Image (tube, rainbow, N blue to C red):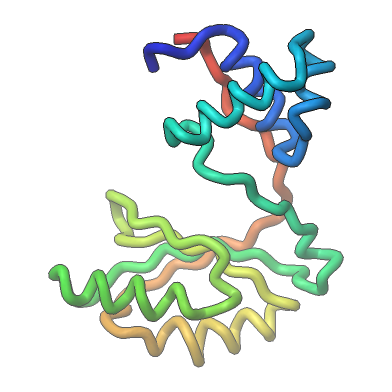
Length: 154
């Protein structure tokens, strides 16, 4: 990470806490002028360091009371089965995250559902019918505390 200074890292730490901050808010917080803060954020975005800003929804308030992490082992290997699986699983609205991983399972999915019965329906009718699905392991989320990872100066 060469080319980034302490101010850039301070901006990134601030945006990790609250991604929707305006450049004026960042400027006040970091002792910069608003145009300087805006230019730095723009430069970080253009360099691909800031890949986007996401809306953080409270899924429980939207009626999704269960989150399950699924480990999925594909029954068949090969580029075609990976592409087919990724395309199909990405079309399921309850699947919030798809991660291709190394280890016992090929994929880790984050799935939300209204309750356990709803999760069972999603699992049986949508996920287990996907191309190439072999073994599946489910872990129900009990609680979660979000902590942004540390950003060190390079």
